[in-house]
Length: 436
Ligand code: 5AD
Ligand code: SF4
Image 1 (cartoon, rainbow, N blue to C red):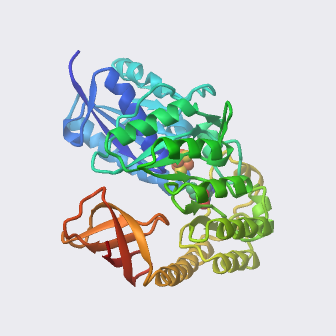
Image 2: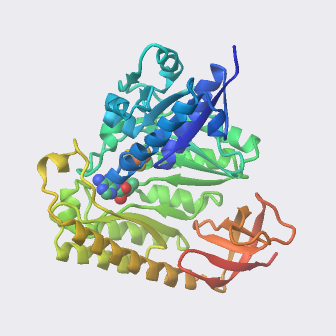
C-alpha cells in the first residue's frame, strides 16, 4: 500500500482534539501517516465546531483557502468532520472545496469515504448510538505536549435550550472503564505527565459498576505519576462524593470548570439548565469546603432570549460573589434547530449583546487579577509545559489550580515538577521563583 499523508486541522473544544487523534488512528491502519505540512498532504481533514455562528463562519472562510490548495494540488482530498459536518451536511459541497463529510459517529467509515470520492463527493452523517470508538488507540498529534486527552463519554442528553451539541453529537454514551484505563496507561508509557478526562458532562459517566467518582479514582490510582484533570462538569450533577474523591487523591488536580451560563433564575430556567442560582452557589460552597484551595473557572454567555438588564446584573452579581479564577465569556448565538431557535425570541439587540459582553470581560479581568494577586507569596507545585513565549530564558507551567506560572529556566525541563513561590501577578499569569 502506498504511504499517504494526512493533515489535520482541529477547531472547537478539546473533544475535537481527542477525536482528530482517533481519526488519525483509524487512518493509520489504512496506510496514512500524519503530516504537519499541509502542502505535502494527500488528504486534509478539518474537524469543526458549530457551537456559535462565528465558529462556522471561520470554517467557510477556511474552505475558500482549501479551494485554492485543491487547485494547485489536483489529487488532494478535503474532508470536513465534527459538529459542523453533522449540522450542515452535504451543503458543505457548495463551497466547491469539500470531497467528503463525516459526522461524529461516522469516523470509522472515513477510509471508504475517501475512496468513494474518486467518483463523487460523499457525506455520512448517520448517528450510531453504540459507537464509542472502542479498541482504537489514538495517534497523538501534538508530539510536543506533556498533556493528553482521554474521552470518556460521547454525546449529550441535557438539551440546554440554546445548545447545538445534542443535535451534532447525538445521545450520550460512556466508553468502557477498561478502555479508558488502558489509554491512560499508554499515555504514561509514552512519557505524558498529565491527562484530561473528557466528556460533555463527565458527571453522568456510567459504565458497568463505574460512575464518574469511581472511574477518576481508578485512573488516578493506576497512573499515580500523572496529574489528572477532567472537563466538563454540569452543576446539576456535581456530587460531594466527586469532591471528596478529588480531595483524597493528590494527583487529581484541584481545579473545577463549572459552567454557570447565567446568574438569573429566570434565564437559567429558559436555558433548561435544571438548577438555580442558589443550587449553583451551594455547589461552590461545597467545593470550597471540601477542596479549600480549588481553582474555579466557568463559562458564561450574555444576551440570551429575553435576558433583561436585571437578569444580566444577576450574572454580574454571581461573578462577584463566586470570584472565578477565570471565565470563558460569550454572547448568545442563535443555533438553528435548537429549542431556543424554534420557540424563543432572540430579542436582545446585537449592540446590547456586544456591550454586555465587553462589561463581563472587564469585570472578569479585574476579578482574575484580584484572585491572582492573592496567590502572591504562596508556593505552588508547577508542572513544566515548555518555554515561555516571551523569553527563551523562562519556562512556563501550570499549578494544579490550572494557573499559568512563568519562572527562570535554570536547568529545568519540560515535564519536571518544581515548587514555585509567586512574586508577581497579572490577570492572565503568575510570575515566580523556584524554591526547591
Ligand atoms: N451561544 C453562545 N454561547 C454558547 N455556548 C453554547 N451554546 C452557545 C450559544 N448558542 C457556550 C456555553 C458553553 C460553551 C462551550 O459555549 O457557555 O458552556
Ligand atoms: Fe465541541 Fe460543542 Fe463545538 Fe461540537 S459544538 S466542537 S461539542 S464545543
